[in-house]
Image (tube, rainbow over the protein chains, first blue to last red):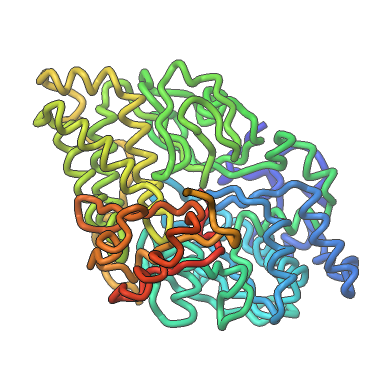
Length: 435
Length: 77
């Protein structure tokens, strides 16, 4: 049950409960969107009682955040709605993850589903203001602004163009940017759901999550649960890249096996050594052993693999997973906000050691130092940036353990001279400023 | 000796404010060690009763006001 989004089937009539695609069944224009999904069902959830009913529907549907953490959306909504002040909603479409482009594609192909979801989420928590956060330097913000102009919604929209920094899409960084013009993460507590934009309880949801909220409001929690697993229901978007025949964004049902997901993207074009699952805060899964690993937002497998933000990259067996990882960890180190010591000093040190391992300039002390530093850095930042980077590095040392031995023995690795497979943004498209 | 304090008070650090003066490690070595870059690694389980006053002294001595003692958990790992 997969569908390629760019060829998203345009059905006539209303989308009916049933197979995928769910998110891309409508169109880019408001008219097409309404013809498929109908009006926003705000009247069905009128009054205080209705708001509670909507939160309950999202809770019953079991929707989990599609931005990476997989937190239960209904629970977050209920916490925000319970605050003393009038809440605010942030639709997070920054997608700073280089291995993912599903949010950008969703905002271009189904903007009104995202906007409907944001209106419904705002209604559910009692907010009258929605900030739509999008990475600057893309056309997505302008497109969304044009589409918003065609709509008549009971909320005030505000488009926020966010610096192109990896950590600026983190929820407290968005709040910080909106409040003070500084896109760096903040220390917790308080969390945005307690005290966010203007000191108000703030619901920060990924744009795909909001699109699912719109579908749940229209078709109900039982319909939502018809695909996916018990603990991770509904469909989800993934970005499949690397050595597959048709790299693209796909809508899949959680619970699908890793091998099936790769087959959906046309299958491997050369022997695959490992697959990175969950973007750059994700884990390497060895292949072919990992073929049968079911992909959900729950942690599975020996390395705690989860779908995260849905970035999946197939690495050819001929490539060097250690060199690829060293390159990404260096990028993540450069993207640190440089606010917390362990992240500021630890990530560059880890990146340097990984590069030493990959390029054959290492000894047993390097490996011991790596293990010690990764354990020391983990969990010691204000945000989870160091945790994500060390998770990736840890899984690389486990998945490429045999390669590691070969590298340590001083053999020449032919993989390091191949072109890198994991995507990174061009330096010209990376901001240095946080404003 | 190591009975936890009844209020569940914990020593916690705001890593953004912390710049590594390391006075906490000096004052409360029972709960604070330093990493190789001089930043504190803090034991965040509830403080034993006999260390609560010492922890408060470390909080007061922090030059960047990065430390606190309270019952709120900053992060669940």
